[in-house]
Length: 104
Image (cartoon, rainbow, N blue to C red; front, side, top):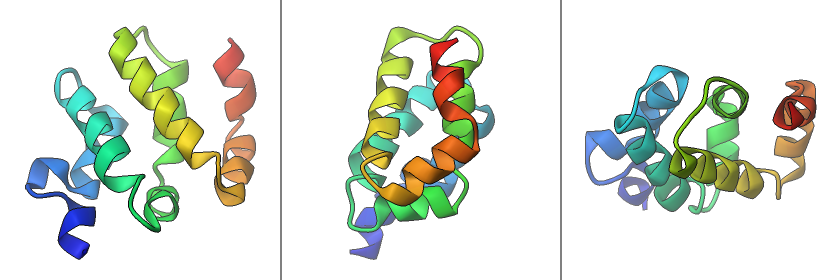
């Protein structure tokens, strides 16, 4: 099970995905977002791991920052929506000021 959560190659590991989220550029950012959504967030405990490793802040920054391709925004919003099904993530999103930044 640990191998599935970490991905089948280094480019799909949670650490790599978070690094791309913090400063990656397309197309690697899009691949990382896809891996986050399909491999990490969907795994049991995946949302909690993503949140604990500091993923929500950079995710919100990506949504509130520079113009991005529609696919990137779709993936980022999907990840955020999945994360916000858990109370801990909703609380952290509020703490990070995520709700107002999405409406700007």
